[in-house]
Image 1 (cartoon, rainbow, N blue to C red):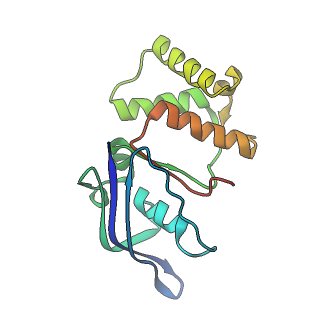
Image 2 (cartoon, rainbow, N blue to C red):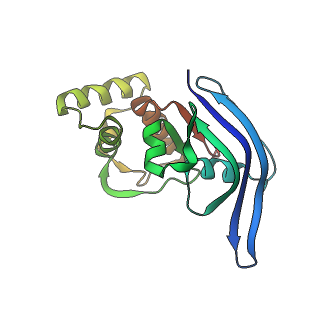
Length: 176
């Protein structure tokens, strides 16, 4: 079982008026398999917490620690955090014209595993995931998020979770 541990996390963002502290000493422990909902009004720092854990460059960590299984995430690049098992589903996922869902996910799996899955194996993995999620097989051939409805974007995120199997998944604005 994996553990994401946040202790005393302080995060600021630079604005025209200078640095503004958004998070002021957040403590949180999440174990794989658990579900946590962080709720609060707009501007209270929910997305800031998610994006700063993932390593978004807009946010400056000014204090505290974030570890995954005892390993300091704050010393890692964004892609190293993903390889360590952290997944962030963004509130507004971007369209990637010309890149199919299957190719996008195969590239992500290749980065995580260190080698590309054999095409026949990969096709089977995608088919199995889509059947488990009751998704139409044509979805895999569509361009990433291009013309997707809100529900299709969410299904794509769930498909990513199914195939990438992260240790910890952070879902920002799950109802968007």
